[in-house]
View 1: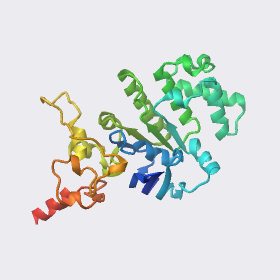
View 2 (view 1 turned 30 degrees about the vertical axis):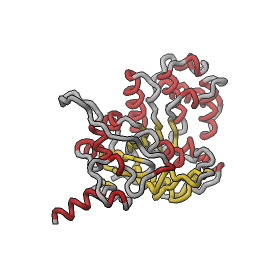
View 3 (view 1 turned 135 degrees about the vertical axis):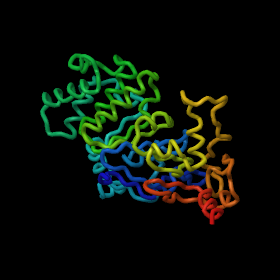
Length: 328
């Protein structure tokens, strides 16, 4: 097993409001190993992007980390000052956002943005930085990179802009790349190319990837392990093959059942009833209990914590404890 690169321990993210404090991330824990692709999946509002933003220190005020620890190679980074965190962001942790238009400055050429990023993290001349920038654009699949580097973001298509964003994220050769819905705004034909590109380049450099998405199909094709979030809580985590073929949490099974396949004939896809609860109205006990068809009395009263189900598999569900009791 490769060394643990990133360790998130009991992470709590809160948003103070006039009506009280809202807990958006509620004691979430996971590790990412060097060279690994960890998929983080869940519905909109599950807390996926907030988790990524907390890791790189880009929570929007009044959001704050209210508990837990984030460690990069064993050293805490969640308590660092703004300047220290800025040096880590980009140099050791790269970020690929879902909308390249908000990641690129429309007033600057691609050359200026790449060169500034490279020179911020490396002690190189303007000429050498430019050569590195051209090489990066060429590597991420920008045709005629040496000519197009002096163009502006609006001269590029959505897929090409996302490739530029990937080049920016990799410019300082980070140890970890957090890709937050990197294919959401792209055509289906381009999505797999972008995902394959991220995975391929990170594998070349030995970097780990935290891939945030709502698409279980992308996770199935890309990730080594998958973490499933629901209402700011971790409900299941484990090797992607195990989770996909034998999901143990009812919510994960619902996500898997909503994916159409070419080999299985069915009249209707699985539908999870209801909607994810608002942060202002989280139910007592398991947050999924109002939507769960296997709900127990305990599910409505007590919150389950993730427990080991063998190997690297963890599930937060009272059903498994009940099955163990019934078996005895």
